[in-house]
Image 1 (cartoon, rainbow, N blue to C red):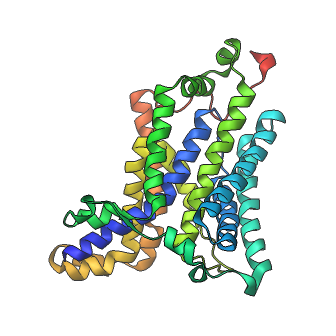
Image 2 (image 1 turned 30 degrees about the horizontal axis):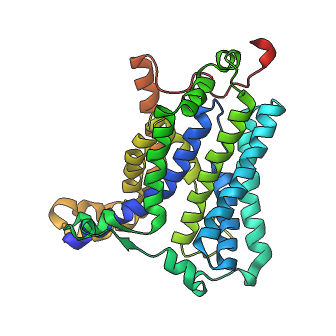
Length: 330
């Protein structure tokens, strides 16, 4: 029975990590005052090109770098349209999602039988294998669940913490937050609004792409012509930004909660079998409900967050988020 709990917790972490990458990336974008609804498409592009490059070079590092770079390029396109050309941010983000997912399917279908097999990439597989942290991985029940994962899992947590430190403890991070709150005031202090927005949107988009690559690797790198690896995770990440109250450290907890509900889709029967008296009722719930559960929770998060925001009089949401900055209107 303890093994079932351990595997359940282990898979919660597995399912939550892509969301953590995407949520941290989107928080960085939104802290700059921009709202990017193209997370899904950005992750899809990062996933497909990062995976192909990683398999070609048989290197996880190459896959991560390519995923980051191509996703950062997508972020630069979003910046070009919304910052330089002053296009509507919502429309631009939705367009990126549509095109990004289309590119994913186009590349996959174009390769067809030439699509690489992950099992043939020996060094890539070895780099993506589990790393047991000395001492911690031997703790009963939770040791394997939390301290026996591949390097991208640990990297996601480290990135989340570093971004929080960057926002809270560095002058550059504080300037970025000032841009998101009041770009006019930041501009009057001599802060280069355009440069800051471009760089941080690109960097945040790059982080999203790594999350997409992780999903592809975790799913065995198998391309299916009808299903995208990302499968709605980008939209959930946008909701998680609100749930985490624009804090990357809170995002660690928030993504774990969503990972819990997503893991129930796979582990409802094992849990019901292992604990028939207390969790036997899980076996009676239709599988379709568990598939829809993460999205139902996403909707509930948005509703609860809206109610909480009204009661408390606000949130950590950047004041100028989603509003294009016209210097002439300062």
